[in-house]
Image 1 (tube, rainbow, N blue to C red):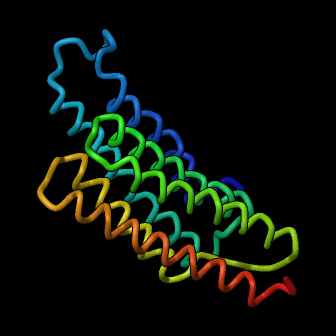
Image 2 (cartoon, one colour; image 1 turned 60 degrees about the vertical axis):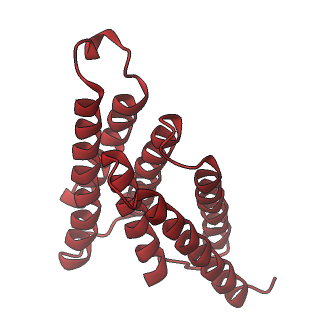
Length: 180
């Protein structure tokens, strides 16, 4: 239960609201005198650091056989919290299309519900290769939009397409494995 991958996932859980705070609570007195660009840099730094923990917790868990039930819950929760914080913060800063964010978050909620249903039926619908590609594409889009680099909006819509396609794959696999 207490191992490095779970600790990394828990740290990622804590970084998500901190990143969100840097994006949306810019007028708090604790940020008085700090230029908004530095808040963006801070949010981007937290995001990159948290994204790195996502890679390392999975790598360490698989390599050193430290996969736990707690980790299976914490890791996807931390991922969702991080992307939720990034996308909602960017939308509130008017750097991300509300429609793109709506599509991504709707898919995430739907697939999370589908996975819960699958688990209750004893069906394993683990993250697929396309699910990992989707996550990486979302992370790149968030990073580019945080830094206001050219191509961020294009990357966001690519992430939307990959997110919807990977959602289709989860639904397809679910129905292949169930009697529904």
